[in-house]
Length: 327
Image 1: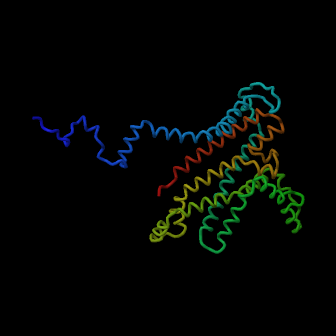
Image 2: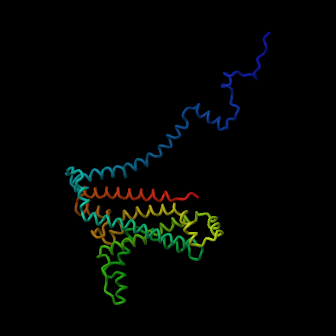
Image 3: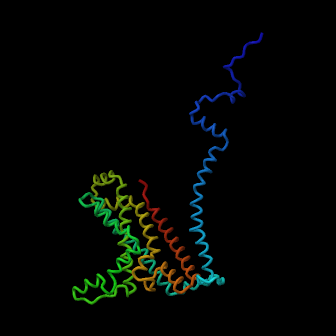
């Protein structure tokens, strides 16, 4: 007579067919179920990737294609209007390295970029340190300093033009009150470049201030308390606590202001037009294309400007990133 089978004893082959000892809500059970369904996670990833398509289309149509097209046009003698043109190779690039107008615009671009960046960050940090303290009118002060950022750069330039113009300008009217002769502020190249740099600084110093305020408020107070216990004064606290921990904010502010200054266009056009003594590379591209109808040459200047800004920005980003301190 055969013995009845003991269901409690299960062979190895049958073990794989039994229910899992974990419940249906256990992570391992869900993972195994996902594998048995075959690629369920992959479908989800594919669906998410579809959201990149609109951004990719915009990038290719508005950035990549114009850039490639500009590089190609820079190797031709196209005038920007007629369909007739011929391939000239690197002739435009050789020409711009010997063009004195390009040299002047290049130096002005460096002044606009580095000068504005330096002034905006120094003044913006001072404002942030002041307005990070609690005192009556602090919010109004922040608003007034940031207010010019809300104005279009072209409008800001036209507003400042009424201050510096020769006839009935605000500055010359003030000089007239004291019996002094009027000054043609924008006639002198270096002085005009300085004025444009100051106007750009005045408008965007609020951006640096806001970034530094955010950085200051992110620093834990325990660091300052520890520094006070060690006997550090306010100056030492700034250099050994505040400054190192502000490097991420400094990096963001410097990069934003540097790129904005190097491609400055609106304020220059409003204050002095595209006159050669105050031209940046941006305004020189405009003058070369529309005034002299040299689209190929203008494209070559634009390509050089793009590469220059990209290289300078990459170097600055790499240098500042190495200085960041991990809290």
